[in-house]
Image (cartoon, one colour):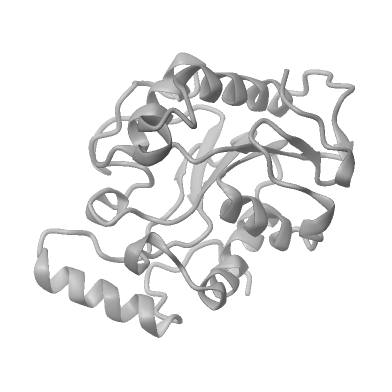
Length: 227
């Protein structure tokens, strides 16, 4: 497969059926695979888990319309990676600068929990996106499933790249993977992820994306913690 994204994809029967049922309940919701959003020449690629039912699945833009996007877009704006601090709808005037957002799974899963087979099928799109994104130098994974999806798309073994908030892993000679806890309502309200923690990891990912020297980044199990 060479497609980065297929808006008509229905390869996962469970997800396709769930989208149909949500659409029947909410006629004004997007309820289709959610496309990546941002700069086509991004140096930083942010990978989330999957669309939220009342967020991206409603609006058609990643991390837009629910709690998870509040911290993300405010932080991107703080670091000059977006033209505004709030993403309200796919049709607003917000633009990302040198950054793009995508998801490991493009369709809404029941209970926000995609099955391993669904992650595997959708990984083909992430693999194609990474291959086509020649300018990307840093990948920021939001959560362990996104972390594992990036590794799979790069044909790397998860056991050699342990997920940890703030960890940095060398993917190849040109790219690094930076890990963060997901900016979900649960993580932010329980303070597992604070604003300061998230800003620190996004700031480091941005620095690595533009080629700032970082002697602590190593391939595989030699990942460095954020500092």
